[in-house]
Image (cartoon, rainbow, N blue to C red):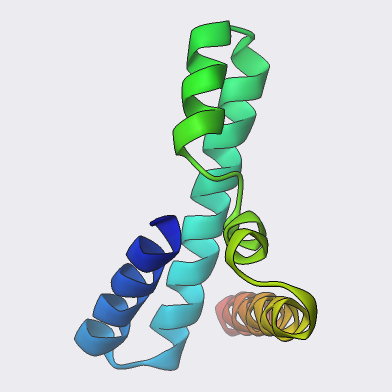
Length: 100
């Protein structure tokens, strides 16, 4: 179910913004949000909150991908995920250089 929601949201972002850079930024934003929520749940040390977060919120996008894919397909998806982070890094460096 979480994969369907992720794909639906990413499709809406691509249709609305129509730029590849907005897709990349949105993927990274979603992944960082999931990682921050997971870290908050772990750091608080309250069992109920941690249990709720670990049950209903995936830890990151690779967790979602590995839940629904396996073997070669998962490897290809993870390389795509890595490529999106590399492209994001390029966008960040370009933005930093333009500000100088």
